[in-house]
Amino acid sequence: MIGKTSHPCSSWALPCLLAIALTSTTGCSSKPKTSRYAMASLGSACYAKAVPTAGEGGLAWGSSLNIARQKSLNNCVRYAGRSGGTPKTCQVVLARCKN
Image 1 (cartoon, rainbow, N blue to C red):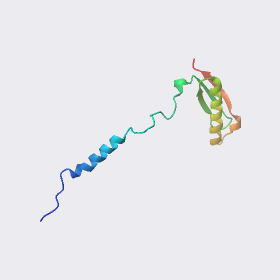
Image 2: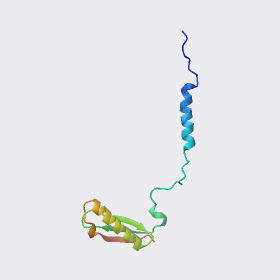
Image 3: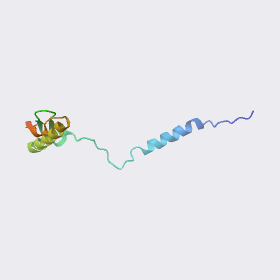
Image 4: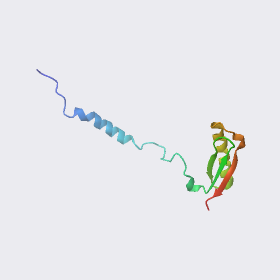
C-alpha cells in the first residue's frame, strides 16, 4: 500500500512559473508604443470631402487646404473604386479650415 505522494507545491508551481514568465516579458518590445492612427486634431487644421457621382467618397485632414483636398481626392478614388462607383468623377465638395 505504498503509493506516490505528490508534493504540496506541485499543483501551483507550474502556474506560478508561467505567470512570472508572462509578466516579466511584457513591455520588452523594442518598439515604442504609438497609436495606430494619427489623430486628426493634433496637427491638421483643415479638412476636405470629395465625392464621386456613384460610390463612396473620401474625407481627409491636412495641414493646409491643398493637402486636405489632395488627400480627400485620393481617398475618394480609392473608396469609389472599391465600392463599385465611378472614381474618375471625384470632386471636392467641401474644404474648410478650423480657424
